[in-house]
Length: 171
Image (cartoon, rainbow, N blue to C red):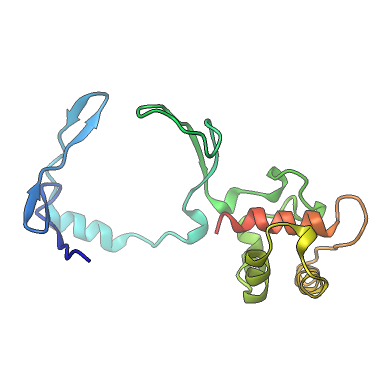
């Protein structure tokens, strides 16, 4: 394994990687953008006042203009729609469970962070393959969050499982 030492030098200048100094180059629309000179003590004071961003406020990709898995040539523009999980409600997912449609990813965090739920969601790729014992565990966890899972339209185990799998992708 290579031994790399990365060290940022004064402000926005050069970067040293394993003894070789590289000059940064920010290019926008074919023109190099020259970074401003900053006052390090003011930057430090500013950073000290910042509040950490919670994981549900860090945007995730909700959709993109090129279908996932599609090969594109270098330089192809791909538009991404980024949304914080706190703003994503499960009603955006196809065939989501009725009791989950107005809930956000953040609302479901207590269920998704549960070790048993996480294990089950990672173990199965589709609802049809979930064992009866694991179905009972998931159904119980959902019931504690006022999610009614039964055989009625819009409230099936398949819809609940798929909604949780979709939500899990945003964690």
